[in-house]
Amino acid sequence: MEFLKNWVLGITICSIIISIILSIAPNGNLQKTLKLSAGIVFILFFISPFVKGIQLDPDYFNVANTPDADFSEVFIQNTNKLISNQINEYLINDLENQGFNVYSVNTLTEGSSENIKITSITLKCSADEKEEIKKHLENNLKIVQGVINYEVVS
Image 1 (cartoon, helix red, strand yellow):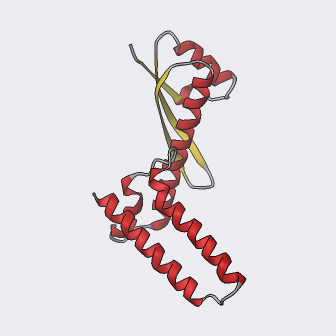
Image 2 (cartoon, one colour):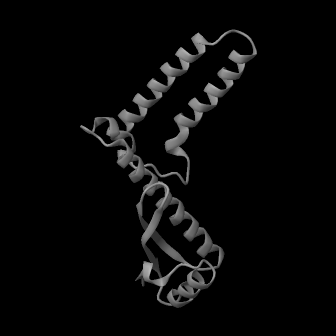
Image 3 (spheres, one colour):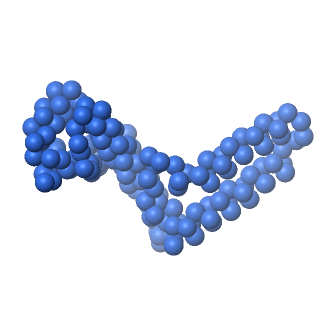
């Protein structure tokens, strides 16, 4: 419920900022361009939680409620979560395109936004495909095997 509250609050703030910018802008072509740009930004902000592939953590918008929040640390954490989700999606799509049946992938990352390191990848797959998946990840994607943990699903 907190996520929904923060999302609505964000939409409200976005609307207010857009209104202020449009009221200050001079009439003419510039205002038309600003209206179009502001509309696109508003629509993207409005639909962002529903877009597939971008899985926002409910705590993503909860930064303002954290007392004495270190925003750079929160930014790094959110960047790591976003990159982990993108890696998960990439690995699942790649393995499925190769004909493997993968049940889930969970990637953990650490580091700053300029230097993110994959610390571990947990991959759930069948026992029959485990060795073939290992070979594919090592040979084709150049992923070091010490990083990957396999959980066999029966």
